[in-house]
Amino acid sequence: MSISLVTSAIAQKVSVKPIPGKPVLLLGAYDPDSIGYAESEYFLSGRAKSYAPTAPLKTDGRWHLSPNGETDFTTRIVVLRPKDAKKFNGTVIVEWLNVSGGLDAPADWFMAHREIVRAGYAYAGVSAQKVGVEGGISLGTDMSLKKTNPERYSELNHPGDAFAYDMFSQAGWLVRQHGSGNVLGPMVAKHVIAAGESQSATFLASYINGVDPLAKVFDGFLVHSRFGSSAPFDGSSVMKPTGMPPVVKFRPDLRVPVLTLITETDLVGGRGEGYSSARQKDAPRLRAWEVAGAAHADVYTIRVAPVDTGFAPLETLVAAYKPSMTLMGAKLAKPYNFGPQQHYVLQAALSALNTWVQTGKAAPSPPQIALSSADPNQIARDEHGLAIGGIRTPWVDVPVAMTSGSGNAGNVMAYLFGSGEPFDDAKLNRLYPGGKADYLTRFAASLDSSIRAGFILRADRQEILDLAAAIYPVTK
Image 1 (cartoon, one colour):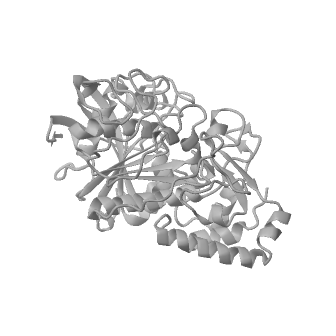
Image 2: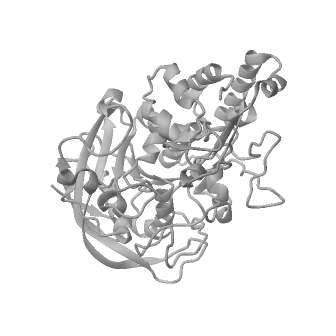
Image 3: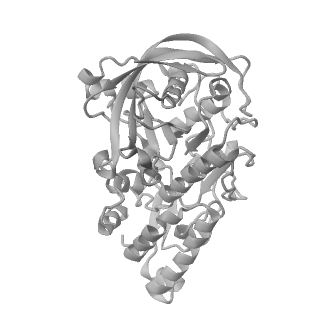
């Protein structure tokens, strides 16, 4: 089938081909069908534009681009939608799949799928970058689509990341289309939100500043875990981009709501410019949620998310959250971050952004994480080693452990996964002289405060309380 896609600035045509069988996309250790979702894969073919700045790009993000040639492409999207169309809430999340590990990874599906399913969103994961399709430089081994399943994906043709922005726009427009052959089946999208984490967030930052004013495809953006820089437009490496300022803010005249969720790791960087160098005040269409005690990646990312279906036994989740010093086969100096706050706050962020898009009611505006007066590249910490300020949750206000976005030694993964250190029994007894009951009373009060502030969803309350009761005290 062929669907015409029209924006105020450009007219495009994309050919859409359904691909039977199981897509190559690691969603978790469960079948989407078991959680009430249908999974489909489509190849998208057409012509994609690249873009070039009309003037040097500045830190303020107020960029102006123009089309700079076009070429053929064929990429894929994987669509997940409620099997029961009546459960669809009208919003599609379009994720720019993350390729840092050498494969297409649905990072925001991992971290927020419980809310996606519970609230009835549709989801589309887009193979936007060349590494995920054809292979290339990454932090992992080559697990690209053509390497993993050359027979299934031989038709794909990614011309390079200079064209990724327009390919992503076309995928966003595609999910809006309805009628015969719609990729959402009988459902009609009312709103479309773009999402991306880490490297994908870096590309989304550039998309928002330069491409969104031209394409006008998305109704909102969830920019998850970006650092201070942003991705180039010429297809050069995000590690050494050409023609880009080292620090990039979001443009001041945003067209639609943007919510960026920042962990401690993202804030101070350490191997490049941290988000603190790109900080700006919240604005009518911008919210930055800085999450105290959170790391760029954590135990939920790789151990809990795969088994967290929404009906997994409590003991399964508790076992997955147990602190570990072994990460992807490597032994670390300390346990990596085992705090669950990023997962729960991200779910609240998605809900708040969707409400903002649908109703115009802006997401809450939290305080920033405090930086050290002695070293602005370091986070100010309390007597427990926990970050001061930012989004407060019971895991930092009623702690049983120190969790941080930094503090581990080793390879780049150790850096990204932060650290965690359970308190010993003596410290727990000092903090909670009434024992477990004392702890849980304080924990519940803090949790309810976070829910009232809008940073944790009430739908997660009982699960969080059950986990707190089962995990106390944390064991090494």
